Image (cartoon, rainbow, N blue to C red; front, side, top):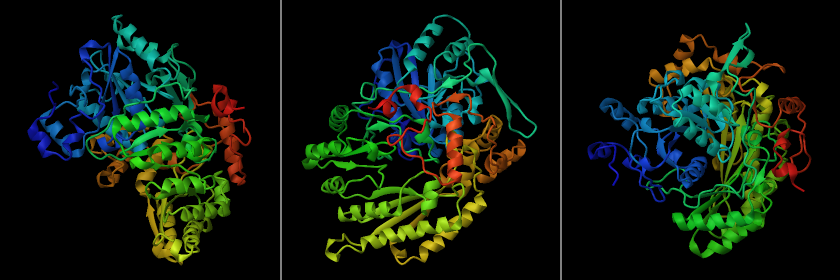
Length: 619
């Protein structure tokens, strides 16, 4: 029987003790002494968010199918337990075995967003693992990072032994086999890192060094050992219907962010939105087969007891067999009270028939992402939606029985004018007006339009990676301008406006395109008390400003300048398939507000065809 790492006294004194006791439904239990590799998977945020991450569920299931590996989990302790663990010198522990993380072979950290960087240091610190990779010894686990932020790992390079660039289903088996070989060899820690660097997709940052020009830009990025590759190639899982996907996902005892079965129907996107990092990183689009999805849906609903299933994708409407899948789910679960959630839908591709059938089960809000209010700006970002199509899609939803619509937009897009911002309010009002064209007896109460804006952050491997970012002062001005315009609309009482914090977005912008000069800044911020920076109540902007000042790092260098065409980026050593040449061509087209067709309409020659799968080889 497991012995809990925390005493009853501590568990009764903290918020939501179920975050730390494990034992969830479908949790895997093995004898830790009977395996060759102990791997602890970490999501550096609070349990409720980490438990909702599909990537960890997939890797957890994959690792634990291997007899020689035991994969366990850890999440960032909330601030109340963090304080107790430091005071009582309690080492951070895994949920499954309740044993210290420091005793594991690997600590794998999923890095989903930039604002969790200090939480990474929190996890290392509480585990008793040296924060900097160069200080670790044979007694310490290897710390490996994965997830979207690893496509520019340089701001946190000092803290990781290695990064896994790409999709986890591909080369982890090879990496762990090399580890087993090294473990029995008696060689030094550095020797395994050299072996790891030769596995495709593995980046070992201490084997590389950047040199700088006088203006602070990168002059060169050079490898220091022969084992390190010149270019690290993104790993792509090509056969999405013959790979790992959990049949028995973990089910928590407390409510988490996504308390439902998540069915990933495809990976990647055909749309080519110029602001969207995921749309470039995960090319080419690769759908799962209908039979695979039916089988997994059935098994996961049975093994979890959930009453909701979410069809996950960057653009669900682009899944060719979406109607067939939805119809099957409705027929199969109509009488069982299972709700079908359809996020990431394009308003121009959503069929009224499908909507009305989903509506038969249980009402919910619909979410659409026009991203920009004016047609000009939608062309700039390559969204390719017309106002006519948006309004028709909204009307289809209203006819189908919906009366609550969430709309997502961005402020601070490259080339944006105040007229474009005003059109966000105007479009929100036009959608509300569409609702009131319905006969009164056909309406479902009052319409509710929730309009949300986030501050645009230029990201690596997008056409806008060359673009400057708006300052927080500009962002605030635009936000207040939009709020005034929303209030002036005819249906203002039906429109609720939400906005994202500009200070946090500014910091995210620095980290997104930063380099190794930021490692010391992040370390100081953490040591001064910064954790949970994505949580408004724990975000200490003043401490971050102090850390930047103490290390003579100018935030505006990363934020406000337009990059030159030939500038070397900190992430240029990574090959995601999509070429830098293509991305710059798209940046130029954005300035002319020229739309590039989607991948199925016409190949734009982005470079992702090198992987030989998905839409690139569709007949």
